[in-house]
Image (cartoon, rainbow, N blue to C red; front, side, top):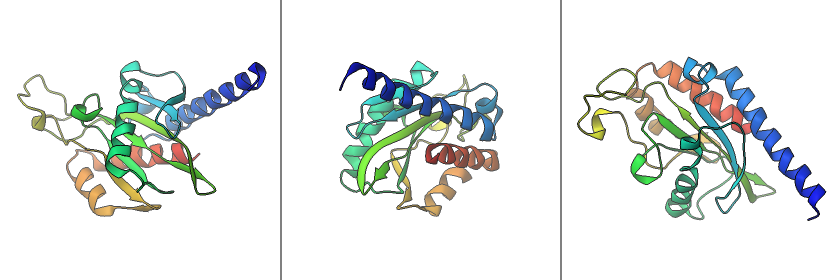
Length: 189
């Protein structure tokens, strides 16, 4: 590819990620996202390599390839159009439990092409204290719910049982679900 075309394509991807960021700020339910902007948006290629990122928190972006690698290891060829994955487990590529990654595979003409990933700080993921952060925690189970790589949408249909289990273990589920839907909408755009 010639250098001019490469630059145009690269800047197009960066523009897309910046638009993702602007959209999430407009549609998020919680102030930690729309005011504090504690989230990062990236686009990954089918091999799990970073293609583009906008203004980002390095601690969000750095572990995303591990989350994606884990998705490929666990689901392999069982990744289809309309599937959506969640992950926050710090032992397998997350940061801390409040930072939840949503991985959104995109298919063009039935071919896996790329995928946006958003890692966003959720204001509460359960645990012993509101906000899920406590200096008194002695084990990770007191900090909130661990989300191993989970397929929460399958071929465009939500796995309502899994989503109910997750949101029932978080304070302010209305706000968590609102942010979840805002993140999905952002990835669709």
